[in-house]
Picture 1 (cartoon, protein in one colour):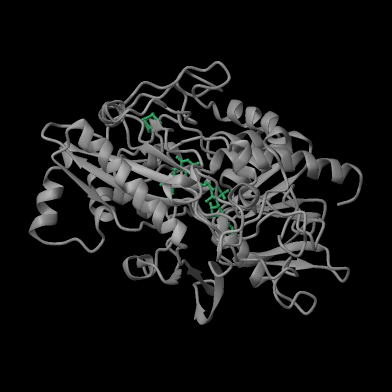
Picture 2 (picture 1 turned 60 degrees about the vertical axis):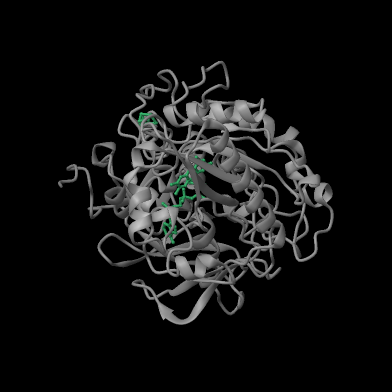
Length: 534
Ligand SMILES: Cc1cc2nc3c(=O)[nH]c(=O)nc-3n(C[C@H](O)[C@H](O)[C@H](O)COP(=O)(O)OP(=O)(O)OC[C@H]3O[C@@H](n4cnc5c(N)ncnc54)[C@H](O)[C@@H]3O)c2cc1C
Ligand code: SF4
């Protein structure tokens, strides 16, 4: 297997001077960081984008789940803790996140769901739930709507802005039949950040499948081939890939003034900065803040509230499989295309707070084998897998509750290859989460039964692909780490620019909202830079 010539291991030289203190340094090039970089460059601001992963190109993508998992995933050591089966089944892989230029937007399926108005107010809507650390967002749907529309246009979201929906794929045709027979009424091809028609110079989806292995046609939005090259084309963005940020530094007034990182050649570099924006996803962002402790910030940077790394949420997700007597070929067609909305509302009479989306998720054989039952082995499991062509899958996704104890801490002794303490990711489920999972699996199995499945199978807990909340936003600096623009309460020129700033997980997939917040944050940063407040 050869990678394209552009698969760079090293960076020969840098454009911006290491001592240039007018630069905004962004850590992480995924949904949050990649979008923010482009938005700021378009406003005339110079950016150094530090990315721990390599830089692949769409020619490097293969329709091979195992190979692309190895090529894209963040495999540096992480430890799973807490009282859930995840600690047993996935002791060193609590989360499914990428380490590559473009971040997890290379892997993602493209499901793009807006928050509803009440989902910005979970504490008010659900009331006090014992054991949960719920807060409302300091932002409303009305404020977000114009930015949602800009994000959807940027991402070419299907079924929005006059763009057509995608067609139904085989997997969802089976699911839709079950939904109809169940009496569900609100289901369709969903809104996907996948081109249903050519858009923004990129192709329309060719429906081959394997979207989560990287989209060779570039029909699926990823910062890798949209935001990042656009930012670079301004001449104001320098991407330093294979560059792991180790520590954010500050001056004697407490403001941040640079980032120490290890570059592609293994050399430690200090890049000076006028402002720093961290978008390393919800494990690495708080980890970097905690690792940036100093005499002035002994508990880590931006952590006067003690909330950095806490309140980790990841959605209640799982797979339910229906096995049929005829082929489904679920791996064909855009993987996540298709959704049932009937269960997505908050209806407390079901016995839990929050809602659930039931979505199509076309997997290939390696992922089915890995996720159906990580402890599965032997004849029965092999017999199930032999029927792969006849399997259909529903992915369930609901709102989980923030628990103060769930989150990221630094291991006291173990260090990674950069000499940084290994992150320990603690996950314990609230009874509301368990009730929601049981209900969502029951309903998904009923959909398959209604469609004529000969057997249904539930997955156990799977590593989180939606990782959120570990530096959450609140207007109250004792309760949250950042304000509604992602600006840390403690340090005005330090920002959190990814899903870590979510105040709650909400029901659906988060990336559209991460991109929306990045567009809004860019306006805020640019204004403050113009006013010399930053
Ligand atoms: C298989 C899969 C399917 C998904 N499907 C969907 C979907 O359909 N819809 C949806 O909304 N979401 C989906 N997601 C989730 C989505 O990908 C994430 O929500 C989104 O990409 C998160 O954006 P981010 O900016 O927070 O982080 P990321 O996109 O993960 O980017 C973070 C980047 O930061 C880099 N980084 C971290 N630490 C450092 C450091 N110290 N120094 C330098 N660089 C660093 C990482 O290498 C990474 O590239 C999916 C995820 C996966 C894995
Ligand atoms: S099915 Fe569409 S979105 Fe998925 S990889 Fe193929 S072209 Fe890309």
